[in-house]
Length: 321
Image (cartoon, rainbow, N blue to C red; front, side, top):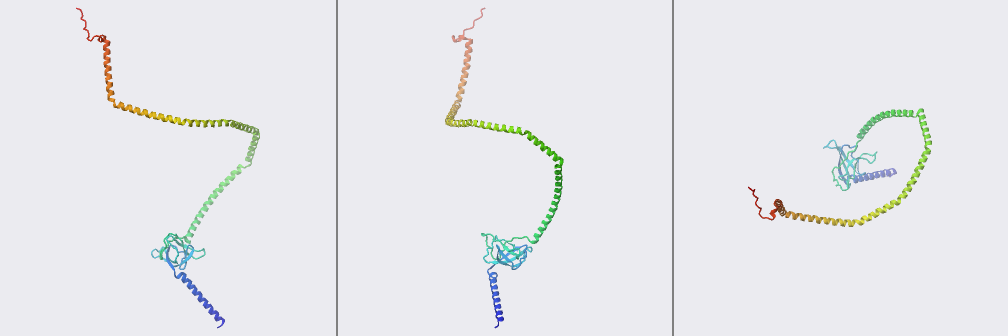
């Protein structure tokens, strides 16, 4: 056997081994131990059979079929398979995604929540729609149109602002003209002259203020002992009040008890008066009758004083005939 035959045989054997290895790896990864799921989207975005399926950014499966859903033609039914043990749960969300910008579209599934129930084979994974390129283009077009309108409005506003700025500059030029500059210089010169003339007066006023401040300090120093004495007097008054507080409280307590006794005595007297009300009325009536009788006796004694000596009244004298 020549060298060419040996090389050919070696290449054929290597290709066979490579094909067997690829078949074995593909069969182990995709042919067995896979769990099917369903996803429904309104926009597939280039997804086709064989597209990758990502779970939390990790490649865990592939898309097996992409077709219109018979129950709702407005949605796309996507069938996919993922490795067994992939924790797809009720909180997981499927949407269009990709590993990077230049890679092919893929189905991206979020990890969901740990406490959520795991989905069984054949169940539907909750989905979330993504913005398509056409939608983004329309929105960008709308933004561009609005931007054009805004730019035109800003241009008009800038024209008005430029006009007002020109007017302001013209007014400033008028204010800073030669005549106004001359008047301002004269005003400043008068101010300088006035300051030079009034400086001695200002110095005298300052000296007087300093003297008044020193006098105020001396007055404060003299008043400090009075304030200290006042503080001592306040402290003594507080102590005196504290000493008198308890006796005053005792006197007030005794006065309160005396008032309560007086109230009880008055209540007793009122009870006695109410109990003897009839007797008192009868006594008062008897006194009134006795008084009336005494008045009658007094009148009779005044008119007939002999009634006190004689029992019978003497007969009247007869008129002589």
